[in-house]
Image (cartoon, rainbow, N blue to C red; front, top):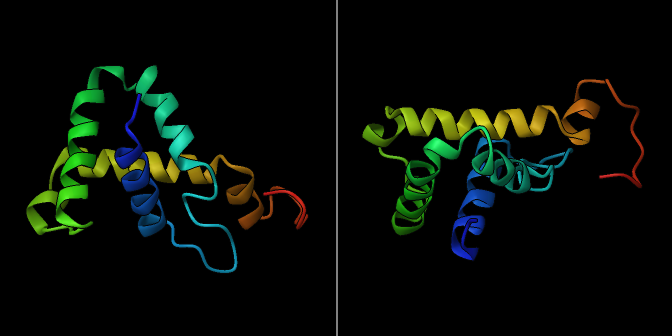
Length: 105
């Protein structure tokens, strides 16, 4: 559903929302696939708005002016990244719900 540019932008946004550090960031935790799945199902009515948001981010070089941050789509996008992260193995591991195992992402 997403273009390659939109996927790359979403991955960059995911790593901005949940930066990689000692644990995987949002992108490595699977946020792109998670969001793409939501856009095909639960978020299908907002898919055009979400992809337009990604296109805008790509054009602005991931610049988040205050007026963009104040939009409902910005909040939705950040929330979906958080949902993706905290339901992933990496997120669960970060809060101790899953034991660390370096062989599993």
